[in-house]
Amino acid sequence: MERQVLVVTTTGDFLLKFERGDVRLLQSLGYTVHYAANFTEPPYCRDRREIEALGVRTHHIPIARSPFLFRENWQAFLQLRSLILEEGITAIHCHTPVGGVLGRLAGKYAPGPRPVVAYTAHGFHFYRGAPWRNWLLYYPAERFLARYTDLLLVVNEEDYRRARGFPLRPGGSLWKLPGVGLDLERFSPPSPQRRQALRRAYGLGEEFFLLSLGELNENKNHQVVLRALAQLKARPQGLPPLRYAICGEGFFRPRLERAIRELGLSGVAELWGYRRDVPELLACADATAFPSRREGLGMAGVESLAMGVPVLAADNRGTREYMEQGGNGFLCRWDDPGDFARGLEALWALGPGQRQAMSRRCVDAARPFAGKYAQAVMRRVYQEMEEKGGELPGGRECESHRGYGGV
Image (cartoon, rainbow, N blue to C red):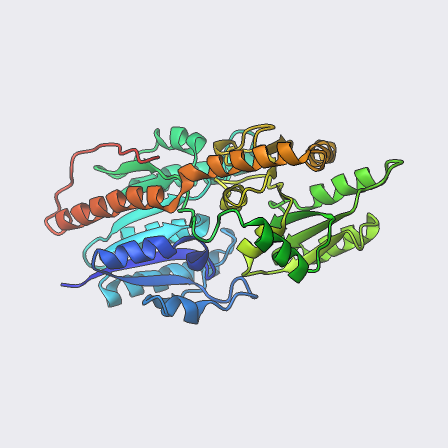
């Protein structure tokens, strides 16, 4: 009998961003891969045909990003339950907070044989220093839903330590992933010739080029970098020749456009929209800024390092997995523009030899996140998923254990 696995996420752009490797691995193991997500979110993303070209069967489920939109998510839950029965789903791998809630509940309450349920937490919303409301809402929810989870995967050490206390389903296992798999063929340092050619193609001269990649929302916190640039511009010596490009879309665009005008950064800071040419943009960059308040890991930062580009990052549990203060960039307090200004000054003050040495350290820091390591762990995860699936029809649970996967 052909095995059917359902990948569940909240938004339709998630699979192409983070799950290509898992799709290929599941298909190599003989699974037909189904993908359920809200394909109207984000509104600028039109990836459904590209996903189907990978051999994935797509299903539009109108999952709402907000956990407080109960009516919409109740309807999405009912549709997921029906889909599991209609397609004979034997395993579910869910991602994202709301996708993780609905995927696990649908697996628990689906009619017919219970599918095996895996959940990858790409960063719990409760963490050291998180707002108290996050702890009141998300911690009890994740702890409760753990009992419906056969395989729980996390991407950083803080979340791993926290999840060790969760009451997983009997026989459940916990894994730590080295990210979702860094593609070292796409993300590797360019030759000097290619770098110069790309900079010319993007209209860049000798100015310092700072780049940010990420959705335009509150968590990504791009405004702190804008305020840092405004502080530097207000100095007597002003800013050196510099361009700052923020690549991404989201509902914060009007706020960022207004901030750029009000801070007097027109001609310095620009919004470049949603981009598919990320490796080429990174090849042009002198540094990248990732000021997120919260990150589970932050693969965009890892991709920057793999290109040999130093990172100016907010200090959070995700960036601590790969950042070395002063070695491959600088960690800053997420809410301190002065901290980011000092980090940026240190980066553009590097001499050629110092820059080359830092670039080498960047590449070294990214290597543990290479796709081959993530895929090795995921192969073991999916093999265990197969084993659990073979046990479920007879109703037998395997012995409780904890699995640890890593580099």
